[in-house]
Length: 359
Ligand code: GDP
Image (tube, rainbow, N blue to C red; front, side):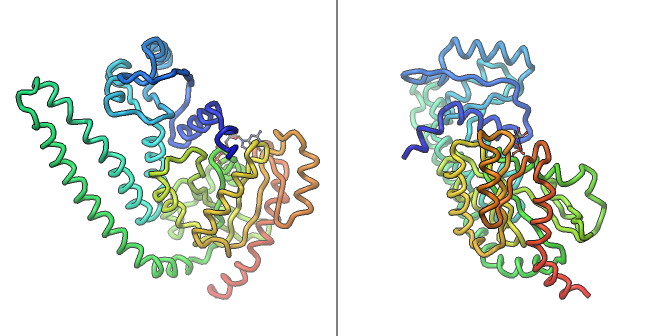
């Protein structure tokens, strides 16, 4: 599998920066180190720790994110080394934060909470072992007992969450039917993180398009109202992006946050066509869409960032010969007119159906 090779650590760090941005953080710097063996105490070497500390002071950094998983001991030691107010976290914790922010349905929120607890469970073990060491072996087993108690509490909570999830899933069908009765079509942007989904969302909508309106009172910040040339409106919603390096423990939570897309009238699959792995990314997204029962929803393929591609003219020609495929640059606005026309055309059937519902 050459995906691993192509997806270099530089790409991985770039994605991490993008994820931090999605989580609402501003990235000021990034760095890496190649070590034969990670330092057991601080993961990185002491020189690197000092270098990062200098950057922390220079920029007034609040958060340091590691691309690899850190042990709880390493987390603690790094936090100590960087100074009291700096939060240290790893990729998994960052992704969990994003999922937590973006979980729009009860089911997604439960699934994310479950993933957060499961992330904590193995960490608990190591968290308490220091008690034994501190006591000099006199109260041996004390830490172990505490671990058992805490693990039992956490397992009970996990069990409760699982049961709740089950019951929420049972009621999902009813809930969907109700949502479908809202007489405004929903268009969902899907695709990899960094594909340009939010750039497209912002291009198509002004920042102040969100009118105070009872019907839209429940809109989250990633959903906007868009008016088409024909005067009709749709809701455009940005979904949580796919992640190249998604920890396997987070797969269920990720899918749950995407669950709502199966209620969309139209899917817009945004692709960074300038990305070396564009084709693999398309396949990965399509595979998950079919697993989410979203294959039957009408779809537009949007090849974004043509301005950045090596062969823009060739791409445009290629897209013309494909069904429902449009070349755009969300950044400079080229192709957006054609895109809007395509959305309007695709929504026509839905609109007819909606008008039949609303006299
Ligand atoms: P999202 O994660 O899918 O929401 O992606 P963003 O909209 O945040 O875009 C990720 C990065 O790609 C940002 O730095 C954008 O400025 C950039 N970007 C988005 N669209 C284009 C485009 O059409 N051309 C170029 N060159 N860059 C783009």
